Length: 329
Image (cartoon, rainbow, N blue to C red):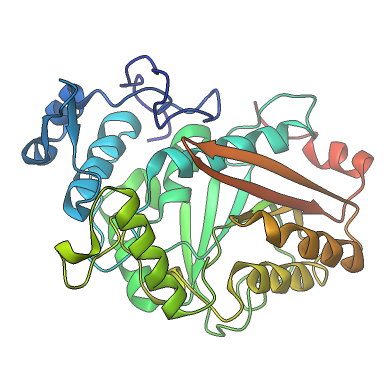
């Protein structure tokens, strides 16, 4: 585990969903469904010829999306076992991989442009979820070590099950329960423990109602009318704290900024995804107030979907270079 297999995508075409992905992302082209099915026959029943004459799958079908994820993880990254309970978030892997690759570049900016690899890089994934996707991708691509935290015991149990059946991952990924939902770093980061990175995909919505409305919009965007099902489900699933929290992502990231100021030297770069550009002005103001030495906004795109990474540090440029001096490449 740690070296992914050759890329199994066809050349990207204009208008493809891969437009805008990071140059090192192995999912930039269209999926090679033939190769994926050969690696993971479980995907086969969900693959058919679309109206354009290409093999494809129904991205509005949660079972199809899960099977596609299993195939990608097995064929591209060598992950033999990946199962999550039906109600938990099933992440779109291309976008998740983009976050990892942009973080690698962020570390490279402290290291003369050289991307660090291996176990000397430790990453804290806040809200690791049942899918454990960021630690899996980060370790398989770069050999990094991870600590994944979550408030949901059932989600952590599912993630531990994935690690149990993939020993190469289990030696590089540690899972921890956050017993105080109001806290982010406190209770998870141990005394004198340091990380090169922290990362987070925060709850996007501010309420359960808002989350349900978002599900309906995505359902319509996939070409399905709400009337087709009495209770439409999001193709990528998700429940509870995975989807919403009081105040939404802006409140969650602001809380993260406030807590990070209390442990300024324990992490080289704190980061979080920010889906709403309207959240950025308030978060930048919070970073200035917290005394961040530097903060950056890294734009990301997958097809028409736009997002960005907000990264901040309390460590000066020369200290960052000293920190990076012992990294492997």
